[in-house]
Length: 336
Image (cartoon, rainbow, N blue to C red; front, top):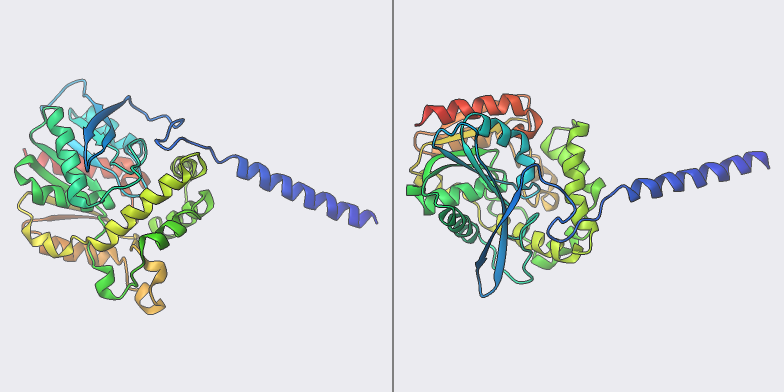
């Protein structure tokens, strides 16, 4: 009887701990209300596709300006805030830094209906920069932001001083390789299952080669809080639409058309590939091979430079910011 009581008590404690753990997930608003960014958030209001929209962005001025601007384009599972350490390094070196949240993400509008395309997001970004009087900048894009940066450079080459790509996705055409297509409703059903545990597990295994630092939990809570908040359905729907965009708009075929100075920063432990979970096992094992993808992309882009981080994964700027920033500043200084 005593043993049963101890078992019952243990079960109750386990349930209590589980409930407490679940309660630690914050609940942020649909535009990430409640999550503080490291710098003042500004807003660019504009009309697009017959509706009013708002892009949140950071505009960080250096104490000793060198007259140059760097634009930071976030990845799909990231926000402008994720660039915190890199913004500090860039501003400290004299660069004005602009870091927007794209429409559909983070603190920006989550439209109910929007035809997402990399070209549309590039146009939105170009309009934002024009509103700030910025005609030319170095453009740094990570992950999905790398795809966007490539599209931006193809559309507005005169506005790009230098193109800097950090583990960009879209360097392989997943559907042509045999990854099954899924419709937006299927993407949406998948997004609705997202929580802190699934975000952490995915990033640990795909982004960081099975390694995890407690520092990353801040960014997990940022994303999980969006899915746990009152805008859960709208957030999931926008994420479904942008997953469809990324899957169906690879940039790999247009790399030879890039006509701006380009540097690729590639963490070699990255295995990111959109839709990989649906691929047959033998195909899944070959996808997201960034040591090979980085070299192929550098060979395809005229005059591109390749910087490899052998022990880092999908987000070297988050995983080892000091090392990444040193390499980034070296490349920025290499092209006046």
